[in-house]
Length: 105
Image 1: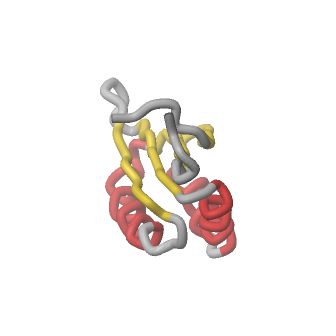
Image 2 (image 1 turned 90 degrees about the horizontal axis):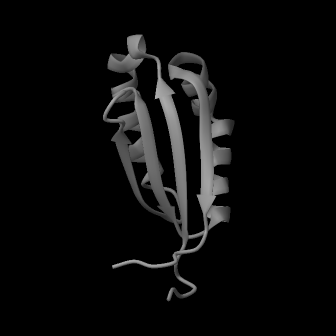
C-alpha cells in the first residue's frame, strides 16, 4: 500500500542518432547536473537497451507531476529540448507519467 508521498515516476524513451553519440553524452551529463537542482527532483536513472545501445530509457522520480511539468517548461523555454530534438534525437521521443506506486520493497 502506498501513501500520499509517492511522488510521480516519469519514463522517457529516446533513440539517439548513433553518429552524434560522442557529442550527446557530455550534453546529457550537463543537462542532468541542472536537472538535479530543480524543485521536486528526486532521482534519475538512464539505461541503454541491450540490443541497441543508442536507445535510452530515463526513469525519473519527482515530488509531483506539476514539478516535472515546470522542469519541462524550463527545458523548452531555454532551448535545450529544441537542441535535443534537432541535434540528437533519432525518431520519436515518448514520455509517460506513472503517478501511483502499487508496490515497492
